[in-house]
Image 1 (cartoon, rainbow, N blue to C red):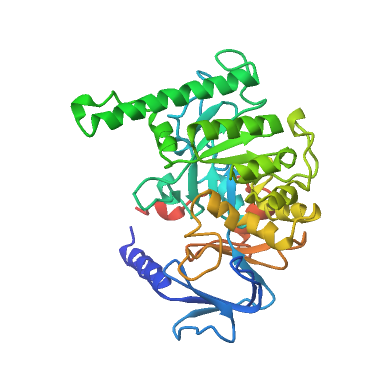
Image 2: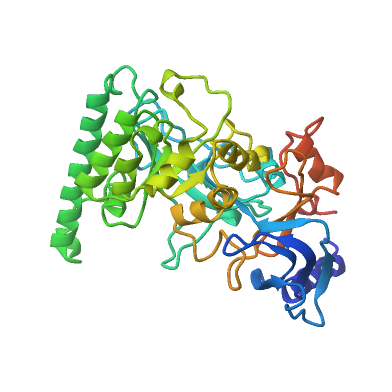
Length: 427
């Protein structure tokens, strides 16, 4: 190893972290407030330091300045339901597998992660698939440049790894035994498992810390106890209105927090969803197909849900919607009558709330993580390109770099996984 070069690299990295960076003259969309036609954003040590009109923001004398005149700067996009990273979940052995963790399957160098960066995504909820009533534990990640999966993790204040749990009903988990063959049986199996989790939790509470009285450790029931205790949210794949109502009944019965995923027919039962205070993470496509339960998809879905009082966010379900085109989801919502401001909120702050990370990400505010994107134009224009993506104050995508641009536009090598030449030492 060339030690002088290595030390120089460390010193450069340290300088980049300590030196403030200022983006000046941009059209800033902070999400937390009105747009700023001529704005400045200052970041340092991975955090946002200042946001406001260029005339009133004090730029530190030692700041590295970026002229962003003619460009748009907004928070990094947050995807509340994705499958990037080539992860998988439960297998065919049982319909309910809460012990399975997508954490143990994600490939952090997979090209889908670089493609997501090129689409302006900075935080993602990576899920296992939907072919089970419960297919495993999801993982909330930051799209940092990663060598190992630990580089992507978001840690909670109590030290736990951030994530939810993926459940599904409707068509997907209905198969031959041991899977359920009907909707009623689907709900029955879920109810049965949650009752077991309640009993397991009661035994733990009764033991009151006495190891001799503790029940044997049960990896299947541990995450369900977290759900019952409000420490883990259920992210529930559901399309038809009757399936949506089944989810809400189960959530009410077992008092768990739920985020409804897809919610294709949410517009039919918007009032019930609002009454249950369940957020809706929805997918926007303009050419429905693939399964009968999505035939009643409406572009007006976010508008109707929002008017009823539902928190609405968008997701890609990548690759149903390619992460590189996530901005288009908001544009489709606007086509259906949704307001521009709420559509952009649905790509950012609404999803941050659904992941319970609203204090860290989702808007451009002092003290929040410096996750943002630089766009060539209006975020809802089909002609706009993501020019740069920054995560915690570090640039992870730059369209002016031919290698990065390849992930955005495709071509030979666009599906190659990330490589880091510095890992190969010279002998």
